[in-house]
Amino acid sequence: MDLTYTKEVLKHLKSPKNMGKIKNPDGEGMVGNRVCGDIMKMYLKIIKNEKGEEIISDIKFQTLGCGAAIATSSVLTTLAKGKTIKEALKISKDDIIQALGGLPAIKVHCSILADEALKKAVENYCSTLKQH
Image (cartoon, rainbow, N blue to C red; front, side, top):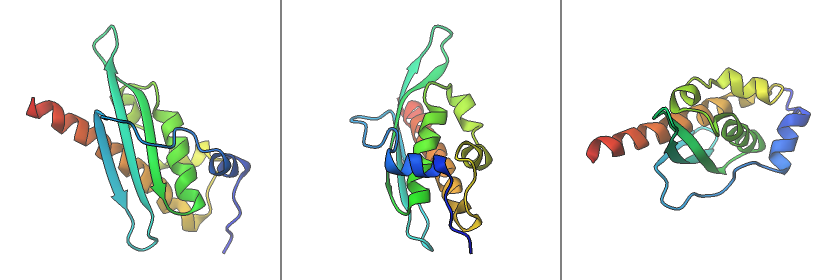
């Protein structure tokens, strides 16, 4: 079993981007994997641009898990920040893996968790809008 991490994974692990919590987020989502024990929480701040499109102006994460879980959370935030919600929802586990230069097969589930955390945060944001 190969657990060799790429330079990009190690970079995001040693200096994660956008780690932390957003006070009064517009959306938040939490996911976990009972098998490995990883837990990820994503926070979103949304603004509207001149066209009225909803833009992720800020995104942060809190992850309790292995190095790959932290790296996938970190790289996902860099991919999603500044994008419209529609664009961000198109980010796939494969995009996350590619941005990290690959992941060991046994760690691919971390990219799926990061993707699911973003989708849950967007879902939470959208459901909050419907309540108002």
